[in-house]
Length: 202
Length: 93
Image: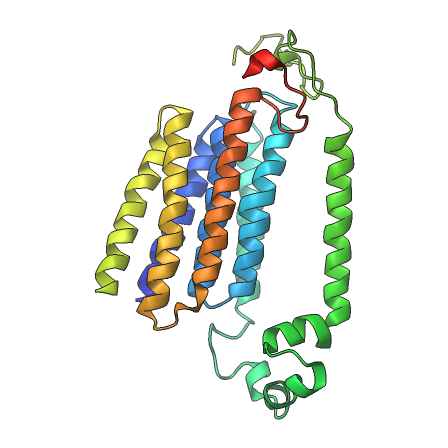
């Protein structure tokens, strides 16, 4: 049953990604991206990675949707027709994806009992039996995240905090444009004249 | 019984996803995606009872909150073409 749910949800992800690629409407693409993150978080819940799912839902579905919408208020709502370079991009994306999938072959299988974390003689037993005494936290995952590898988590928090400050400094400094100015003349827009001089009516 | 509910939810998700991908107007997509988020919340709840571990209900609640915030943001952007400033004119409303 878990396999069925996971497979159906992964199929949804593929369908959504194809839809995002095909659609020219950027607003529809943004809200489909939010849906993608929500489904990915659902898959993480099904695979018992609840903390990852929590982060994915908050960051992917919540914050990045609002971030994309804020970025879209500087541009137009339609994607420009692509040039001739999309085939080269496709080749690079396929090569990168193949390398990433090739890299996963070295990882232990999902739920495998032979993974290094399971076969290490003292590691799991140490965390299960002593983490409550050493850290005082009832949740073992939280004790590993916040105490045993606390400096790593601190680094992550610094990165996220810096990114948040950067986003606020970009979005917060912009004044609302006057009412009579159409969205086509927004300050972030590229010129609509292409190289051969023809003008796109979007 | 939970298996039947799970399969029914997956079928409903297929239907709303079709509407979200094909929907001619933006309102079709927003409505379909809001409904799909609700289905994700229901799926997490039903799946928790299916596997005899209904511990993830609070996660489902947070998902519904995030879904609501996303819908509000999209609708606000669609109405005002802007998210940042709150200085709207009186006749905007």
